[in-house]
Image (cartoon, rainbow, N blue to C red; front, side, top):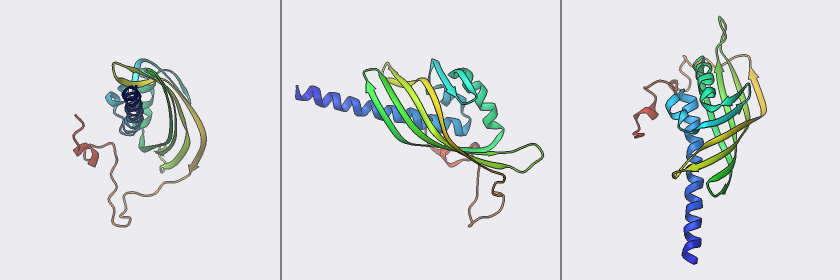
Length: 175
């Protein structure tokens, strides 16, 4: 009986960590416009209700990747993750903050910061967790009419896009 309870607690921890991994892979995939990685966080029949888009997650990926590629950079940060596992299903609310550097035609880039929550229904199949339904609640937004000039040397730092293969994270072994 005690061993069963310990195994249940251990499985709950493993499930929660696997769910967090799905969320972190989503952020990496969206910021790097990595279609394959992004497809791997959703079940094939998943739904994503994401601001101006509502429909199948695979259609969301087709819709969002070109929009993201049209931006100079994005950064999605995920925090305050609340997870409730119920067997092979989980309810997950994750706060996010997102930065978008957007370039308008023939004009200087500008910055948009927004925050909200991913409200996910996740499902475990064959020991793998993925998103089944995602609803996005946008809570705030802040637009700036300009952006910093990253071509200049600031504090001796070199700025590189996180979408290019020279990005430091591409040196890591993800296989």
